[in-house]
Image (cartoon, rainbow, N blue to C red; front, top):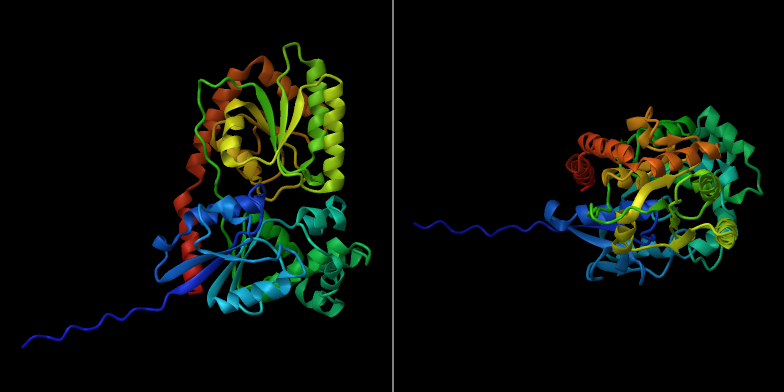
Amino acid sequence: MERKKQAKILKPMKKIAIDIRRRLNSGVGRVVQWLVDNITDDILEDTTLSYIATETSWKDYLPTKENCIIATSQPFSKEEIKEIPEILQQNDIALWINPQINISPYTTTPTITIVHDTWYLFHKELLPTINDVKYRFRLHATDHFAAVANILTDNSAKKLLTQKGYRLWKESNQKEILNRYGWSLFSLITEKSNELVFVSEQVEKNYLSLFKPRKNINIIENDVAFQCHISDTVQKKIFLSLAKLEKRKNILFILDSYERYVKKTEKKAHPLVIVGDRGYGSYSEKVLAKISKLQNEGFDVSYAGALNDSELARYFNKTVALISASQTESFGLPVLESISHGIPTFSARTGKIVDWFGEDDKLFFDNDDYESLANLLIAITDKPLPFQNHFSVLRQELLEKRSTKSILDAWITLIHKYL
């Protein structure tokens, strides 16, 4: 007697959504790029992936918008507070991967929030103006910032914050709306996110110094999303700065140090190219004015703007050394990208790279000492080969310290936890 064939029971596919509305040329954008490239349907069981994008942002990350759900609202806008939760509910999204800190949509959908930094809570002097934020994120209005800034009340602050956190929060006054806005956003993700993912131990440590411990926190380090072939036949002839034009990136310091280098070097000076998003208007205007002044005085310095990956690859191939002078940095992806390509890299002592190579005198300079950076630029101009050999060794050490597979495994494990 033949056995009846049992009908195969198909499990319902669970839907995951990733927010890809941020620009590619940013730290958040690079993390989004890595998530899109590495977390795919074929490695997740019984799931389908969707991407919340704008009409323009999907082109930075995907070949088509086939799996995209198009939103009309920008990150941090008043409009997204209503639109994003509605989109997630209408599309039956089971898990929302949020690569930035915003106020939506924790109340409707299980959410994993990636925490990149806490600098805007510790360093309010480095914050842009509200008009700068409006310009950068293309916001129609900013009146909701004040309302959000008042979400964290004295009673809730005492429940959520450590003594240090409460003191810092109390020190911000009502006029410092962006600083208080940041505190409120962090209080929301602390209360509402199902999981917080910190990009480094230092970011977690900083967070826990301000907020009382909570369950479901994780550390998953960033991985390199940008990769290109470095040709030995292309002449290395430029210094490169890869950072958006904002105050904490310290671009004016790089320009002042470069000016000293040109005046001091006995050999022909290499040109300096600044690559990155325009960032925040009030600071970018100062940077562009300084570049114009140096150009008028005969210095070979230029601003190339934000570049796509193929354009950036051409610059990487011409780079003598990459320069990063950030005043504060949670991770520092451009430095990681540069060293992973074997490119000599000069960095302030900020970001994850300090944990790996903190005592390396060929890598670090003091970002309050113009001569410290200028002397490194002179040294590599005079004798590039020792630097090239040194950073070839650092590249190998870096590859041994990091594993894309272990980072991906951590993400897969975390996602399945909520499915």
